[in-house]
Image 1: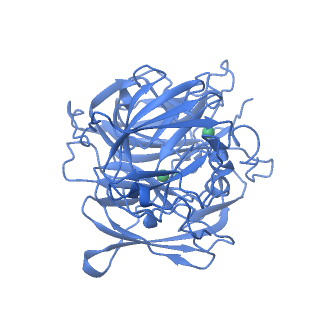
Image 2: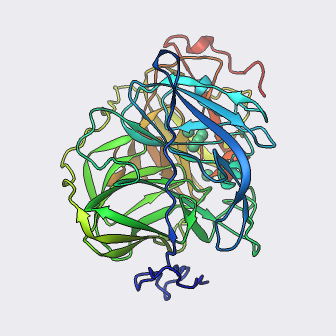
Image 3: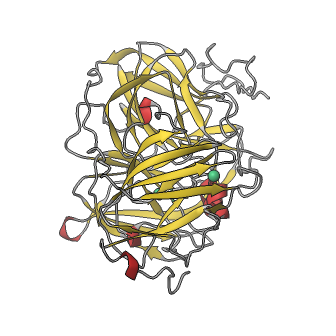
Length: 477
Ligand code: C2O
Ligand code: CU
Ligand code: CU
């Protein structure tokens, strides 16, 4: 199938979709890339920075001449970018103006379970939820999205998602001026009806939705003007199911500098990297004056990564502002040392709706984990593609199907691809916020699977009290 739009911007270039490659979508890159606004926090008591978010329904113009019913934060689609620094005390005020209950989860954030925004922290229509915590983790690209059990896929698909950038003062000399040389790229695939409505049922089929229109920051058919010699992109796979295998149409190489939970020890030069839903990568790309180059996702033959799609055209100014070279050493989060005899937990992903033979039950605690521990988690997948996300933690990938992970994925992570018929082993560092009655989640981040029950719950407890913890929660929403 081809989508050929009239060239309206003069930006149409020969480096668009390859018409001979199956699944290619030919774009003319007519639309300027939307860049989510930075949400400025309000000063609160005791130096608290208060971020106000409102979940709302509306209409968005995503396709030319068409209106799509969408949901967003502080607008009709996606949400503003939040930015905070290590040590900041933050408070969120999330108002739900939707017709149904939802939640907001801070994906990648190290914080107490009651602030986490999982399925146990519902926000009823008309209500305001005000979680607060102190940012205590390295610089990273995190994000936020709803997490109401059974409805996450629908709420995210309609447009509820945003970036949450964390800084710390150890950062080396990297591009970091938001909207100038540091951009979020939120990748989401959609299906549209002829009238422009979102199509497809995110809870049907093996994976839910694998769309044929890819939006970047909610922009279809986008271009971005480049003004500096090097640009940092914080790439988020905010899709329900699709895996992206990202590179440039001209095959150029670039540097991956960070994973989900922070910077890599050193930049890794690649021509492609892949991301499954929920994963992030930070990259730095060099541009030549006046050039135009297209960012694409390439078919990788995997069930959730099929099809070649153009994502975005970069159009560099004839003169570019100088930018420092990518530093050869970055300032990564501390390594995770697995102690001898570390506890090993095994998780088997079953079909599309269970882990270790059990579907998600909000009243059941599946795992009790001592605070501040390091454990090995083994994820086994005998079926089609899945991935695995753990709330609150940082982990490193030890191995994938017995082999090393790609070198660009050796940094701090919270979500990992689990290829079909393989086993992935993780070294997981848990945090110190104990609460035996408030669980964190672990789950497949293919939202159709998460909503169908491929999710479990763990609590963090004082070491030595594991046996005293009740495995059932007294009440649940
Ligand atoms: Cu991004 Cu439990 O989710
Ligand atoms: Cu999460
Ligand atoms: Cu899955």
